Length: 134
Image (cartoon, rainbow, N blue to C red; front, side):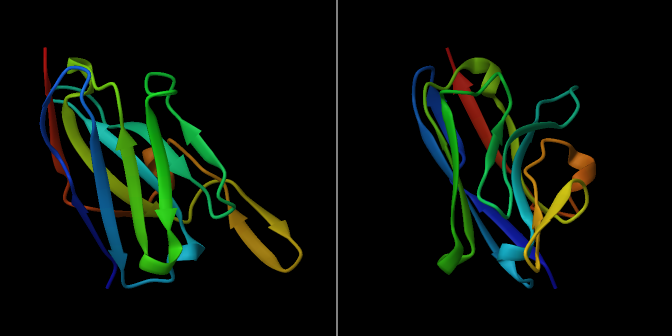
């Protein structure tokens, strides 16, 4: 049974930092692309950052230079370091894992490219709230 459990959310003032974590279990971690998404009240879920199984990353323009996605394969854990937080970053943040979407073969291994599209993800965590005050 696939499980994704986020932690690290909270309330900070503008300019502050938070580090989100996502503990994954129930599947072979390296076989999936991973991503962070967020959803603010009344808005659609949007991709924030993603990392493919080739370790190449992708970021939304709104967070480039401020957020960093990383992972510890030995711990099956995904991270999102968020610096320079702004009130518009306030949202519920979700961790996701997926195998749909763009892939490529190198040798005998299939690699999944990073993606910011929710449609490319199969499994979702319960979310962690991030609130940034001005």
